[in-house]
Structures are given as C-alpha cells and as structure tokens.
Length: 513
Ligand SMILES: [Zn+2]
Image 1: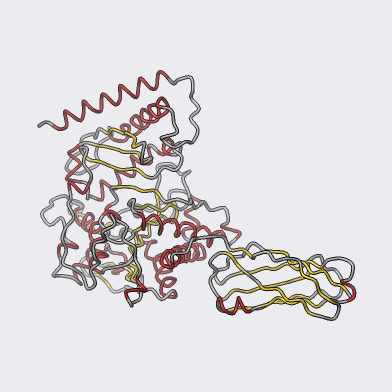
Image 2: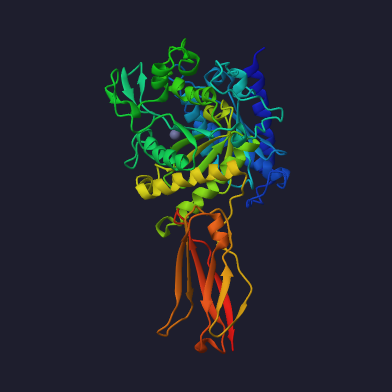
C-alpha cells in the first residue's frame, strides 16, 4: 500500500477543512486563550490552518539529514478531548525518529507553532507521529539486560509511584547533563551538539549546573548517578579532551563493554552523526539499567527568536512525571525568585508534555527534561553563567524532587497569622510561630516591634534547626508601661536556609494593667 499517498490525501482534506474554517471566521480574528474544547469549531479550524502553514514552512526547507535532504510535509491536527496538538509528518522520518537530528527538527516545528500553542489554555502537550504512527512503533522498546535493581512493571498504566523509603535504601536519581562531544564521521572530528551562542556552549555548561544539582540532592541523602561529572578531568585519548566534555556513550563504552545495547544502539548505521544518536539514546537506557527512581536532565534551551526566555520542563505525559515536573518548576521558581536580582525570571507552573523526546520516552522512571533558560536570549545567557543563579536553579530542582518523594505539595513559604494576645505590664506574652510551605532548615526567625521610634525597640533573632525546634519555639514580648493604651505590632520574618523569605506576618499584643 502506498501509505504516503493516503497521507497526502488526508493532509489535503484537512487543509481544505482548515481553509473552509478560515474563510468562515475571518471576521472574528481575536482568538483568546481557551481550551480546545471551549473553542468554536471555526476557531479550531483557524488554529489548525495557521499551524499547518507555519510547520510546513519549516518542513519545506528540507536538509534535515545528511542522507535525506528532501522537504518534509507536515499535518497538524487537534486532540480536543486531551487538549493536545498532534503533529504528523512523512512516514519516511519513521526510521529516523531516534536521531538527534530528528529531535532538533521536532524542536523547530514546535517553535514554529508556539504562537498558536499559546492560544490553547492549559495545553497538555504536543505529540509527534511519523506516518500516523508513534516513535515506539518505529523503535520498539529494547530489552536491555536487567540492572542491579530492576523495577517491577506497574499494573496502573504508567502510574509507577516510586516509594523508595519502602525499599529500605536511599533513593537513586540519575542526572543527565545535556549533550557532549561526539565523533562525526563526515567531518572526522570531535564536535559538540550545539554551537556557542551568547558565550554559552550548552554541551559544556550543563555539567557545571549538574554539579550543583548533584550536591543539592546528596545533601538530601539521595544516591546520585551523574552521567557527566565535572570532576572527570582525565583525558579521553581518542579526542584529546577531558572526559567530562564527552557524550555519555563513550564513558559507557568504557565502563559497560558487555552492554553495547545501551551505548551502541545504531551499530549498523552509516550516517555521520550516528554516535550522537547513540549518545542520546544511551541516557534513558542507562538510567533504566541503574534502576534509578527518578531521572533529571539538565539542558539549556534554544529558540529561533532571541525573545524567548525563562525555564521550561518537558515530560512524557505520565502521572508521576507530571507531578515531579510541577514540583520541580514550583521549587525552581521559589528559589530563583528568593533573590531580588532574579525575581522576574520566568518559570512556568506547568510542564509541557512532548511525545518524541527519546530521553523521556524510553525512561522507565519519572523523567523530566529541565531547560534552565534560553542560551539564545542574551539576558538568560548572562544568568546561565551566573554561579549564584545556577546554584539556586539547581537547588530548586533538588527541592522539587524532595517534595515529590515526600508527596508534599509545593506551596508558598508564609508565617501563619495568630490571634491578638493580651498581656499585663511586667509580664511576657508568648506566641508560637507556624509556617506554611516547605522550608529548608535551619530557618531564622526575627521578631521586631513595628513603627518603633523610641530608645527601646526590642527585637529577637533565633535560628531553628528542625521542625520540632520550630514547633517548640515561642516569640515573647514583655509589656511595659509605655505600651498601655495602644496595641503593639510585632513583625515576624522568617528566612530559610535556601534564602527563601516567608511572607511575613504581624502579631498584635494589647497590654493592660
Ligand atoms: Zn539541549
């Protein structure tokens, strides 16, 4: 059967429907943010029409693969029920779904339809199909040798709840710093996946950030497998470069010579960047081999427009992955914003689900690609090189994992208000200090009298090392004669070990005789 012919027919029908929609809705140009189900059929048709035009502008350029420079035709449709965008492309890309070049192509297509995607409220994700079939059709799951602690398949359709504490061991997190040098058979050299932009080479900066993430996780007593540890400064002889700069597949080739299925997935391939593809593929397979409880990927983002900025999280749509990503984003936002200088840095609340990101698709554990910022945006690029920013962003990711593991929601740190208290002159009044949120201990608690201008302005400062100390602690205030007549206001400020300042509270004391 000539499948591509059938597909073209389908594409034409869609285009015709879209055009019909377009002409019938030219008057209502203003399409506000609404879910796909809330949109009128005309608005949906308009959206599809615009996306088809933008995506095909990308596809028609061709030259995506060394061995296939032909243009690619793309057909965009909507899954209204799932609030999903579905991008289907030529079947001939199917056998190439696992190529790094395909990931780049999918990114280009996604960027080209961002304006339309932004008009879909609560979009759950974008799925990519190849000749109408998902990547798993073209690349069925390999069956690697079981690792030291293989996970049981969960009966609840992808809801593999990880409860490491019950396993009687420290939770294991695999960290995959994005990209790294690979050997290109056409140019006969070792080269990074990305180009230096605004002073940032993604391949080299991700191990630096991953180092912060590894130490933050280790202080939470997590066993960490960092795939590209920055400390690995020994020289890899074939490239003459320090090991930390290389893609993961080379280290695995050395460490796991008996497991080529992990690092040599494209053994029969002749394309020039086959080792780059193997590198990408090796990461989830290695995380599976390790039996990791969670998988965190550290990347920096790129966009054709220099405007795009801020953090992103990308997942394969599965319940635990989404919960982990939501906690990661929320905690990144909390920590990054704790410093005034970074307080306007954009961090969204929801991740984007993308089918077609091999790093997530093949991972058997909750897996999140953290795009820390856009190296294509000059402001983001400055921050991405800032050690303090790197540290806060990565501690945020680690905190997100802690909350996910403990099953706690991410909520704002705030001092709980208390009722007004009454005291007698010459006696102390005591207040407990309750907090909402998830502070990192130790926390410092400061109380001072507000609007105090006299000689005696009492203030107290204390450092509390755990929840029990916090619960036992009382802020005290001694009523004196000059407090008679008007209520005294105490401001309570709390700052946690990550530098997150709690929303302050005011306690009131009425002093009497
Ligand atoms: Zn990347």
